[in-house]
Length: 147
Length: 71
Image 1 (tube, rainbow over the protein chains, first blue to last red):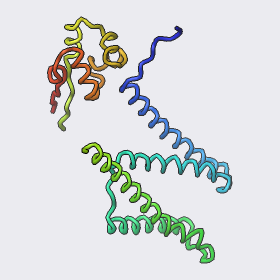
Image 2 (cartoon, rainbow over the protein chains, first blue to last red):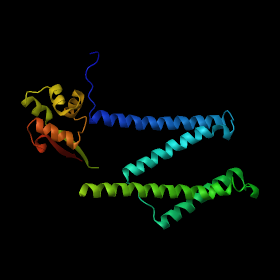
Image 3 (spheres, each protein chain N blue to C red):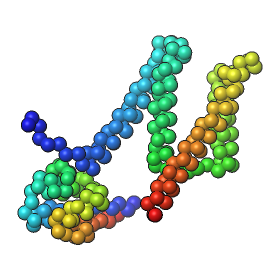
Image 4 (cartoon, rainbow over the protein chains, first blue to last red):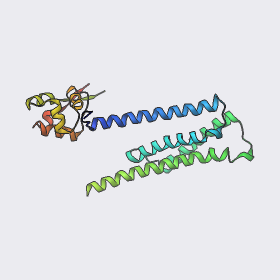
């Protein structure tokens, strides 16, 4: 009565998805900028920004994981590839942290060495798991369609 | 670099059938703007939509759409 009939077609759906993907990226960047501004310009304590950081991490890693699972296109690392990636990533993180903060006090190992050594392992493990799940999902889909 | 461009005779086929863009859009379930963009070469339709357009305009797929290679 007040509006013309609205038709949702493949083009409008694809435009909507495209716009949503762009805007998600913009939102993540803005959120990261807010965290950076509060931390380094306003000098707020790291603990006060835990909620922002958690939301940002969930958004970024959730988005990547969902794309990996839905697309199933990312290569699964071999054991050797995973080990090399772990060593390179750990070396980079440890080097950068040592350059910035210096050698850490041994008593603070849970806040220094543990995350630096465990973090990359968790990251690579999570990536491998999600890439595996994504590929398995697509393989199952193909098997189901073949039957 | 080899770049392929999808060309079409949709406008010609639609006019031959005596349909307006809006009527064709209604028959295949898309917006008039989508038909306009396909005719102008500004949007590549899915295979599903190509088949519907071919069905409605009584043409084969390769009569309606083809790929023109450009170097």
